[in-house]
Image (cartoon, each protein chain N blue to C red):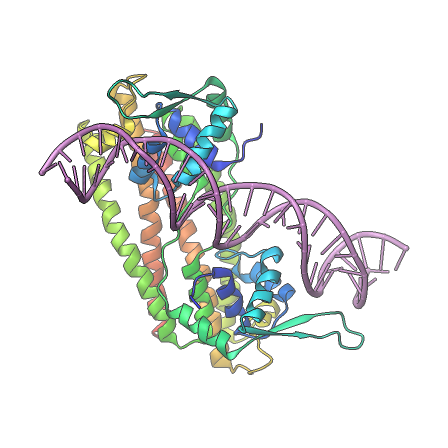
Length: 203
Length: 203
DNA sequence: TCAGACATGTAAGTCGTTACATGATTCA
DNA sequence: TGAATCATGTAACGACTTACATGTCTGA
């Protein structure tokens, strides 16, 4: 059993926090991971089946009286083991395909204003995204300081099985924040780059 | 004819510089674009066929006497048009999947040293890549100042069809350099992030 | 002469998304 | 009552990559 399919590991990692349904997983990723990871339903549901097939997770259908049908998945011992192995394993740098950079590069034979338009669009996108990120950042910083976790953050952090104490929660929240910081620093660097381009090409 | 398949546009854009073979395209990408774009042979050759089929490029087989077989592709008027349309079109931000960030995020329930190991590996990777980039940067800066273009850079920039003058070459070289700068700024930001993580998690 | 670059291509597989299909429950 | 959200799934397609297959030319 090699450690390679990333979706498997992503889902396993989330299940290692708490048992969840496919729907939960999707929502969780949308809420807090979308700036570095994304999954579609069409990928999540089949993967959950495979995890069960391979004994890495177990499925509990819960059509409890009056309740909606819900398939809750729980990570198994083997699943935990595989996940830990993957966490330890080295990470190959991804093969990049950045369409905007491609456009910019290929604009070299066009008029300068073409290059500039491309870069300005990029800058606007980055600035807009950065604003949202900074907002989330402020909320998280507050939460870490005060110990008062906003509803949605708490949902992500909370775990019915093993009640987390405040210290554990704070640590998780810190990681959460640092993940966000990666996005923020990356965006700031991109905006700096845009400024540099505009300056150099305007000479 | 919509503007969507990125590989088509990447190849069209390179052909807009000068006629090339599939092999040339691959080498060119490996040499100068790999930090923001990549293509495999298994993608390039079929795409070239499609471009010809759609009238966006023309193929000239040249098994000239004594020469090796070589299929050279030339962009057509329609191809140029489509490429320009694509350059003008807006660029959607890519759906990201960053395995390292995923690992870091999912390490939040593990011991701190697990998170730290992940980040330190990342930092080492970035520093190694940065060093190479800085080297290329120095060469390009020199070239722009002196007007003396190194062999491989010149190969990328040169164009048998329409001889470029020094000014045009310098502009292309600037774009080349600025593309590199994007990579450099991104890497520096990532290294900064690693430092921040190490500091915060060591408290 | 033979390794390594040059050169082209295909078939199978990987890994994912989009669109579709279905239906229950909640709440305004 | 009907829109929104909850919830699960599948089939078709998309956009590649990898591995394979094949052969040529060049220069040490």
